[in-house]
Length: 485
Ligand code: AMP
Ligand code: MG
Image (tube, rainbow, N blue to C red):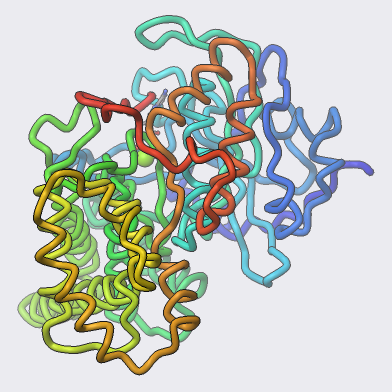
């Protein structure tokens, strides 16, 4: 079947100062590395057409598919706390939107598709390793039920690019509810372009918050979704790694998988990113950083919140104050599910903190420390004890939890079902991710990547090969991730 993608181009029809209109830059020798069949299906796209010569050419940026109106979007952003008024898509091109089978529009964006007016000296490209990393982790997050952008395809370009060393280039097709960011609003706020802010607000409301009204409605919506999102991250031990305001999506999806990684041993100070020297984006700091980012969105929206500046600030503060209770409620409820509690009682948060403290003291694995609670709830605590080897911390905690469980009205079956989905058996383990990416990038061998992806698509099912469920032997002291630009 010929490639036919029914594009809508609503963003490209907005005023042209919101973007630059340009096509992707063709590459030497496109070759399909990975195509996401379930996602193609969900988007109503024909996988065979996408895998055809024309399809791969389109996914590589060598052919602009009929109906696409390619643009690079303008945005600004606070990077590690410092404002940069001009970032924008420096290596990405939005082809347009497609309406999924669920009736929702989604952006199709090529990432690594060549320079744009926002490349700032960068080459506009991406390496195979980082592209496959984003593919893998975003799909893992989706399978965990966490709102996220997704990955439709990865195409090798057949061109070498230079990072510290030469690496092979690739293009990722990213699928997102939209690519609107906190930084998109900041870009126009910095230019005092209130008209553009109004346009963006109306657009974001229509696309993401159809029941809400005005800048206050938008801000409240984003506050709520981001509070829920970061709670979800915390509950699976996900560390985003580069929570700059340009990487904070208005839709409430996780976006921009650069130096992200999952924590093994529980430690709130965990930080992996090689450039995050001060630990600004460490695991335990993520909720505060989201709140900080939302305050930047509120600032950008001030001119729309009220004509009276004092009133605008008061309204912004009132809405932002909703973040902490919202985050806490989501976090507490999630911990309750992880502990197998169907009801909420006053001491529950302290009970959960008690387990986290025991994990910290024992350097227990965060994922397995929770995963093995399910068996412990049914009287078999052996696997759980293994995670807390040689420490008394768990012994003091277990009877407290068991007493609390005894006061629960639920059946063991109901509890099992809740715990199963709250406590995944597998997360993307750092050493396995690195192994899979190295095989693909250095030896052109995608088998480890595909095997890992298959396991990550069923995160609540203990894998046949238990290697996928375990952290690296001896841990990964000093493990570092890179932005991959
Ligand atoms: P990121 O760290 O991916 O969020 O990117 C931050 C900014 O740098 C964005 O404006 C990107 O478009 C830009 N950027 C990152 N890598 C490149 C690259 N290789 N070439 C051009 N721009 C880039
Ligand atoms: Mg970014």
